[in-house]
Amino acid sequence: MEHFDLIVIGGGPAGEKASAKAAYFGKKVAIVEMHTEPGGAGVHTGTLPSKTLKETALFLSGKNDKGLFGVDKDLRRNVSIEDFYYRKNYVIESEVKAINHNLKIHKIHHFIGRGELVDKNTLKISEPSNTTISGDFILISTGSYPFHPANIPFDFKRIHDSDSILSLPRFPKSLCVLGGGVIGCEYTTIFAAKGIPVSLVDGRNELLPFLDSEMSSALVDQMRQDGVDVFFNDGLKEIIPGANDSEEIKITLNSGKVIHCDMFLFAAGRSGRISGLGLEQVGVKLGKRETIEVNSEYRTNIPNIFAAGDVIGFPALASTSMDQGRAAVTHMFSTQGINQIATLFPYGIYTIPELSAVGLSEKEAKEKGYDALTGKAKYKDMARGKILGTQDGFLKLVFDRKTFVVLGVHIIGNIATEIIHYGMTLVENKKTLDDIISVVFNYPTLHDLYKYAAFDGLGAAAGHKIKD
Image 1 (cartoon, rainbow, N blue to C red):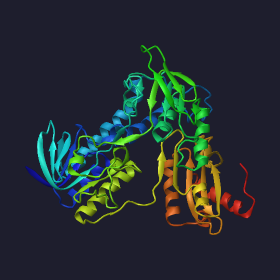
Image 2: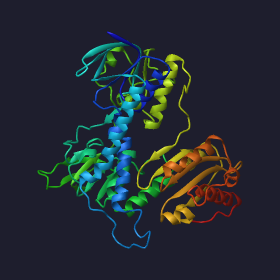
Image 3: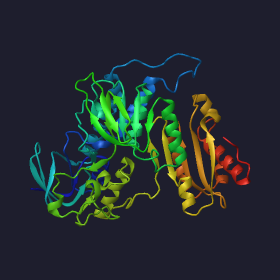
Image 4: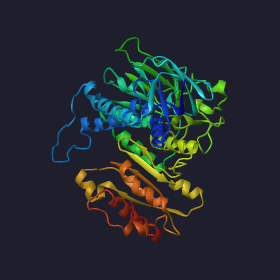
């Protein structure tokens, strides 16, 4: 039986970065992946594919270019479903090559097959590897999978989850999305940008409630401008599949509303991928939705077994998962490097338009006792925004009236997920509105949003805030 310093189960963002870090510090590492290609959901069914499809939808729809150069015509490109998926497939293939190269240069032993714990140090691997290995430490980073309620008859042809929606045989004539979380909102806007009629159903009274309420409302407004029917405080009562490919699916909501659509996407939750790992027989403590419970070191109740990434639950982001894997290795082997992930990190939602946020929302700031004020700047008022032809979107600063310290930054609009990072440094370093105003940015750039939002905030503090 071959022995390793570390066995990593799962080759997604957490597993890959953990294995590479351990190998960098001279440890003998094995990574076990049930699929023939590493990368996990982050590469194959989640982060990268959906973000690539968002860019593809924007390009094919001409949404951001209509009328920009005096061309007053329909710029939509009529393409096949294969064309729609082309760039997505290219990005996946390219990233898989990069990960395989990373494993190779770090001399990480790569086993293909399902891993099952025999005991706390021994892992049995199924076909095609068909072997058993042992390790001093084990990291479980098996990710998550789409939750499947019993009342939804998934056929992965017309009734889909967030995995199967990435391999459609054709474009839907119309689509109903159940679930107004990140995944549901992203796919709603992607297909709406393609001109496909979309209905979005959510059981709450707002989308993405963890965001500042103005951001959520602005996204709903944009969805409705793009023809999306949004149904709040409602849920699925019954779904009746069409008898054939030409007969529409009948969806009855709890309210009694009936929606007829060509395809249906369930996007209301994911569960940890722990089935078949043998965790119960080893005694690893589990949490809700098939997640694994860990402490601040990413250590389970079994001292040599760690877990990181989606399989431990919130925040379940590729960015945080990578650092969780690295931090776990630090605690295993007392190596150099991070021993915990940053407590402050940005959220990025790749809808059309993008949303990104860091720090406190206006509501959260007030709940924490701050005398909170806000300052806003619109994309369309910035010189760079005019050059880009951006008509929608804004940046919102939340700050303390007494100190002018920035408490939160919230953006909806073009490349919001890129320009949020300056905002993260503001919140992290407790910078003030005056600090923002004193900075010189390249001109013209969208970073001017920060400066003019700061001016607007100072106006609010002085009692003469510019009205929208």
